[in-house]
Each structure stands twice: as C-alpha cells, then as structure tokens.
Length: 329
Length: 286
Image (tube, rainbow over all chains, first blue to last red):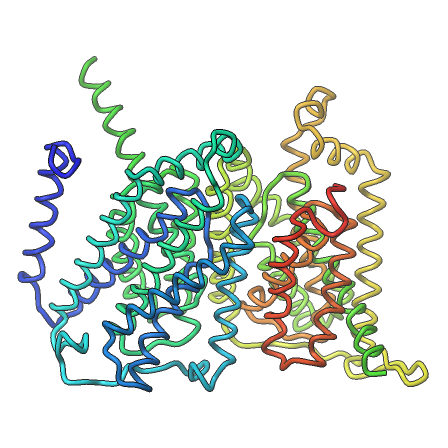
C-alpha cells in the first residue's frame, strides 16, 4: 500500500503522471495542441470539482458556472482595478466561490434530484443576467480582458503555453487529491450514505444538510479558483462564456458523467474524450455551419446516457468482465 | 392606475404562461420526468407558426393547431427513441438526457433556420381596446383567449375522454393501470407528445407579439419552471395559478426594475418557493 493505494494502482498513477510530465516537451510549446491539452487539464479539474457535489453527494448541479464565473471575475477585476496579483486574486476568487455556494446551498440543500437541478440551473442563469446587466462592475456583455503584465510566475502570465500546462496539471492533481481525500474521509462515507438513501442516513444520525453544504462549499471554492486559472489562460471572457449553461455548467457535469460519475478517474477520462472531440468537431464543421459542433456535443451526451449512464469506467469494467468470461470458457 | 394596467397585462401574458407550463407539468405528473428541453418545443412551435405565416400567409393564431400537430408527432418520436428508456433510470440520467435534448434541438434549429430574429406582422399587431382609462392589447388578448380555449380543451380531454382517464390512472399507479388493461407505455407516449405539443401551441399564439430565434427557449426556461414549481410540479390547476401569478409578478416588477432584472425577481420567487413550499402554493394536490 502506497498512500492508501494498492501497489498496482500506484504504478498506474506513476506511469500516467510520468507521461503527463514528458508529453508537453514533445510538442510545440506555443502551438495549438498544447493549448488543447491545457484546456483538457483545466476542464478535468472542473469536472472533478463538480464530482464532489454531483458524484459524491449525488446532487445534480446544473449551476456550477456560477462559482466559476464569480472566480474569473473576482481575480480579474482585482487585477484591473488594484493591480493585485492573480494568485492573491485566486484566494479571493475561492472565498467568493465558496460563499456563493454556501448562500445557494442554504435554501436548496434539502431539495432532491430534479428540484436541486432546477434551483442550481436558475442560480447560474441569474449570475449570467447579473454579469450582463451590472455593467459598471463587470463591463457587461462585451466582457473583460486581463491586462498584460511582464510575464512572470508572480503575475500568472507567461510567454509560452508550457508553464500554463504545468500549472493546470498541478491544479488537476490538487483537485483530484482533495476529491479522493473527501471520498475516503468520514465525510465521504456520510456522503455515500446520503447518496444511497437520504432518509436512512438521517435516521442513523448523519447531519445530511451540513454534510451536503460542506461538499458544496468545497466544490464552490475549487470552481472559483479554477475560474482564475481560466481567466489567466484565456486573457478575455464575457458573462455568456463563464456563466454559460452549455459552455460551463453542463459541460463540467458531462465530463464527469461521460468518464464515470463519482470516481476519481472519471472526470479525467471524460475531459480527455470530450475536449479533443469538441475541438475536432469545431475544426471540421464550424467553417460550414455554426451550431454543428454543439449539436454533436448534445447528441454525444444523449448517446452516453442511453448506452451507459455510469460512463466509461463502468463500460470498461463491463468489457473486462465479458473478456474474462470469454477467456475462461 | 399604472398598477391596475400592469396587473391586467400580467394576467393576459400569464394565461399564456399557464398553457405552455401545463405541458411541462403534464409530462412530470404522468411520467415523473422533468423535461429540461420543454422550452425548446416552444421555440419549435414558434418556428412552425412563423413559416406557416411566411409561406402560406397563415395567421399565427390559425397556425397554432398546425404547430400543435407537428410537435405532437415529434414528441411521440422523441419519447419512443429516448425518454422511454430512462423512465426507470436514476435522476442523473433523466436530467442529462433532456439537457442533451435541449442542446440538440437548439443547435439543430440554429443550423436549419439561422441565428436571425424573425417576427410576423399581423393587422391587429399594434391595436388595443380601450376600457375607460385601461388598455387591452389585442395580441395579448387573442393569445390569452387561445390559451384559455386550449386549456379548457385539455381539461375536458383529461376529464371526459377514455384516454384522459387512462392517462390519469397511469399517473396514479402504472402497475394498477396495467392490470386494468391500460397500455402504460402508450399513455406515457401520449402524455409526452401532448405535453410538448401544448407548449408548442402556446409558442404559436405568442408569436404576434414576440420575435423568434433558435435561442428564444432560453428566455422561457427559468420562467416555465417558476410557474410549475409555484403551482406544484405535476399539478395542472397549479400551473394555471402559477402562470397567472408569474405574469402579474413579471409585469409588476417591470414597473420597479429595469427589464434585464425581471428574471432576477422571478428567480428570487423561484428559490423562495422551493425553499419554503417545494410542494407548491396549492399544496400536494396533484
């Protein structure tokens, strides 16, 4: 056992990490491919943050864009108006993201299934409306640009894409470690009890509301911090992008679901599939018709739900089982 | 006076909200599925009416039955291919299937119809009736009357026809309904098709005073869910009360707040109802 992993798992994680560390040196450090890899890592981290609420607590949030957008705006506005380093801005972003998650959790945490999804969807939409209409603060629908600074780690700006890659990788690792830590903690078991049967969990003395709020706040803090990463990486964003239902809320949930909801590897597999697939669809179709790439995205979501709603992880397990059965025959 | 005028306008548009939301609540009441893509069927209804006007010169109000028929068939197909398969699945599958459907419909519309905003012109578009110092906009009034008519027709259908009764029986207890020889699967298909078609009908009757584009559904998502949650998810009578209340809330809030913040007011109402009375204002009466 190494860090609570079986040795086989530990070897697997080490190999994947080694590949992730070497891979960027084999491609153009300012090219297009590495940008896609960065987005892939970032969205994997976001899917993992969603997974804390959606996967562990089984609360289907459709409003995670709210915390993400709050984070992106917080650090960027602090940088624009007060010249505060995005790293400090990120702490503020995390705090605001967590506070927003706490505030929306109070009235919604007792809601189940569809009702929770509806409430969070509405919350994300309202943040988008506020982002668009409070122009004096956010700049309104035209969006904001991150001011250029001398490239340095302290200002979270770099000439090459390579440093971003390693920062995104670090972010993904941190979020994944937090996910696994929660999953294995006492709170993780409480969350699992809630997931299996809320009423039974209540009866055996789990404070379900408090446990769910804890998960939501951790998830909100992480989403807020990742919003800062996104802002510093893209340099420009507008309310419809960072608060978008399809662009963020549904996409992060989909990444976790496609890979395997509630598993640590799920969002990583999901992002490795969804983000490059979207880029390919964009490249192939966007010249001909707007909307086709999005259409593919939606169709894919439908297909995954109909074929295996538990995602690649379960699909893979099924394949392995079938293979073993075939071999033993 | 401005307040009475606003309440009157609110009731008029609220009547339409009631009808488009009855579709949503019907689907939930019979099948237990929250259709996140419901507003996209409203958009399709608007487009059917728009093309009926552009190509055939048909008034949107007359095209409303056509929108109903087209979307009814589409709804039956969607149920057959997708919805049927997740009826017993966990909430996550149901939610994300209809979210996927939302994305597909919106972008398919974008591909087929383009992103431009379209509107129809009718002879009564700008006319209004005067009642003392109050004005009733004719397109509002006509849309309201059409909604009342379709709501009444649905009520009669659910009360008196064999299908209506069978559908309500299925909603109450699918197992018992099956034992009595009711094809529950067919009833679900009928409920889904009827639900989305009714919403499309509502889309057609509001076309005289609104513009249509593939993204118009987005404006109605929070609104429709506020209506049904206000009235109690699954309750048809609740949707009527909810629709009228939301219409009045919206037009009263327009007096006090800038137009962009109207959705914010709705949201506060929405969260408030969810937190305090998740079973709706009328209570658990399904």
